[in-house]
Length: 386
Image (tube, rainbow, N blue to C red; front, side):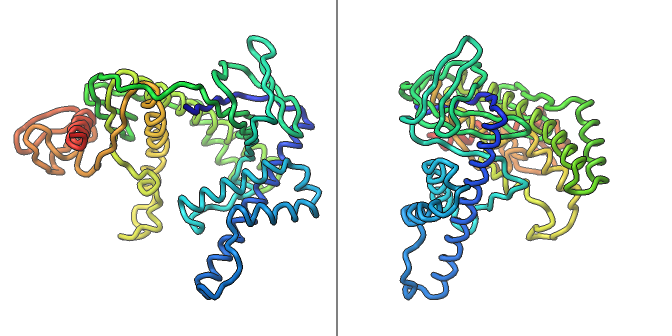
């Protein structure tokens, strides 16, 4: 199976400048190719079959990229196969999501990232117990903090930047087949904003991703940033400090979700989750179809709470870990899982007395609301799997 191995890397000042240049080149190629595809779509809608020019797919754009690189020194500074990989990524995104749904890569919102796809041009060496190094085209040897072994053959390498740190990520083929079903008991999981995950066995999994002091410091920095001149040196310095707090919170959330996914898939044969469309649930109330612009501040608070728990990240990690531990991931319809009584089947919004208590108005059954919802999720998963 293909697995990822991500490490903190230490670049020299010259290598940092090179990596930033590679990232800028990839961003420019992405935006230029996306604009070309969107323009072609507009002309195709206008003229239909009378439009005789070939559609700018990957093959066409790769040939055009060679001509552009011959005239631009700053593009030639980046490895050609790195830029071609950007075109491949764009082609895949357009095929999966549609050209008009693919986003631009903004200079101020996009973190530099580029991939070396050819393993023949990649050399990895172990320096000692704590350090390793990898040789990449035009970047040369770069050191990385070797926190664990690669555990397989390297397929490609991605260099990325986030919140003041550079990372190197190896896509590795570990040579292991997908695990056979483990035959362990099933579990239903209800994801929430107060408790991150509740299981049908009655366990509540949650943790705080920032401390109280960090929250206070984040508020102070955000207020200071609002008073500073946008684009000034102080503004950029404050922005970097805010980004470091967000990055620390994201790492803690990823660690929590990774450990929870490991526990769920290792000890259960089937993990049942609700099929939640997190992007739609976290959409702003300003553009709502029903009553647009109503209760915008309240909806914004709910959106932050949803995104802070990392619902989508947990599902993605469970899907990966299920292949490793011989488990199975099932997604079910989330409608009324918090309002339906799993004893009598009555559906009534009044049964949800509060966020933490479920009390059926029909049969009187009382239980922790999140655990009760997790049991409903498990029951639907068994029905779907039968």
